[in-house]
Image (tube, rainbow, N blue to C red; front, side, top):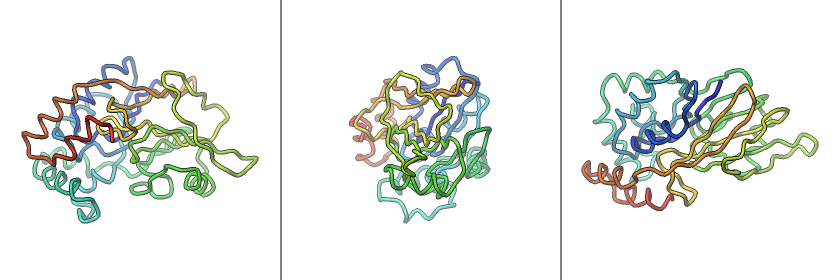
Length: 242
């Protein structure tokens, strides 16, 4: 099976569309949460996912959009966008988000938005937090999102430590015989200084992972956000990838 692995779409439909075109051919979509929040097209993003065979888990902004998370947890810009998203979501798409599981286990892979330890909220950005997750859970490969940063973290059994592997864009990473935490980055709101949509290709037959980037029409998303009165800071940061 060849999967396109996406996370943190955040209602950015032009970015999602471009990723789904660039990733072809693939057999199914793995979505690691935060389909909505921040962006101007939550309904379109939820519905587009369902055009493909897919597995999707829930993220913290998805919870915020359906009232399962207290919006006071979020910063002011995120909170304002979630208030708007709550009003914008159709009943069908609200139901879709409500039914998403918190984690999914499939073959050698564990899917969680944040981390195996705290699936909704934990940010895995350093070797220490990765080490704790490797030590506490017996997964082979965990696929996570939430940080908006493309990243790989590998467990070194002989040293009982985790190490950070930065993306080698376009070069497949072998997964065989390794314990890894993999983050494809964000489709809809990258935060590593590169505004291009970030995603990954997982070949479950060959056991490889490939980080990918693709440009999209950022200005279209920005104009839609302006038209909907979404916070200016969220509009500006799309162009900066921050």
